[in-house]
Length: 247
Length: 249
Image (cartoon, rainbow over all chains, first blue to last red; front, top):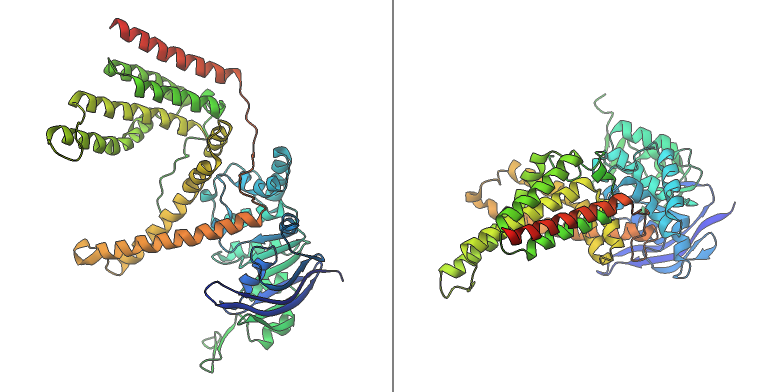
């Protein structure tokens, strides 16, 4: 297989001294779909922000064989499409159409080309004809889809989604799962939603305290780290609480 | 949550809605400039301009009452400025010395109201994105436009956050001013500021992730038509006629 993400000895500390990543080593091949699990604050989001140069720590991060640098930042950001956790952060333009066209325009497309790319991306996520809608008129699910369209319009090779099902109702969540599954890009999905991961991903990484403590087939990682949706496990208290206890 | 929507009338189809935003911005600027520079016979000049604006509002199919009512939003601000000026006139030695005469104060309030009505017409018939694009083409600084765009976009998000915090405060009995509610409200404002700051950082990150390099890309092309020239010409001719007529009255 052809590796599209290669990360070696990646370390990153925030300005307040918090060590967020402590020696990450991972390789992801083209076409793979990988779930990133782990407790809150374990470094998952910090890790994905390194993949398109939004953060730069010590170590080596290569995208499609190229190390990330100032010279190739524009191309890297086209190759790695990042969908943020809060869609409101990503939908900053006055209308949905302008927001989706924002990326292609920054990549040098003409207004007409950008509009065509935006229309195609909106159709792909099921929001055709919503170009002139204002983002604050959209539902949570539609906002999430519009944010995804904004990234798809840039035709990325790698799609990174940060907790895509947060705040979605069950139909919205199912609809998003149906949308993500057939996408042909290499996918990294930061999530606590094991059902989403089961439908979309084949491999999982488990983050703890800035390190990857488990890497392997999805089901194996879920079982080994006891990360299933059906049970909560607390290592601090030695408790196991099954949600089927009352059944 | 109930939010005031500013773009409710943008989707109507009328000759004014179809015009290039630059023409409408320049015509609005001409009306405001005319009012600011006018001195004698202000009462009937304002009445003439209101009549012209009312005609345009009817033409645009935006409810006239809506515009007339919304333009009143400017009155507390101009009223406060005028009241301070009057206080300076009537209270010798006060901070605001050398204030306006009552007639000039009234004229200032009238000018502010009619100017606001002209701006209401512009905003009701022009989409925000077109307005910003028009201002950009008229060489208004990009940083200023970026601030206006983000202010309009995130006003709704922040006001929703403020409403959530207010609900949370009231649900725990923090609604009464007498029982220290003002302290909780002050705390909420501080939290809202910090949240807004954190959100601004996240938005900037999201912009960088999609190739932002410091300037907003031009998303649509504008086209100046005969209708835009006609609007400009008619507006200027009307204002000139009003000024000329004032010489004979």
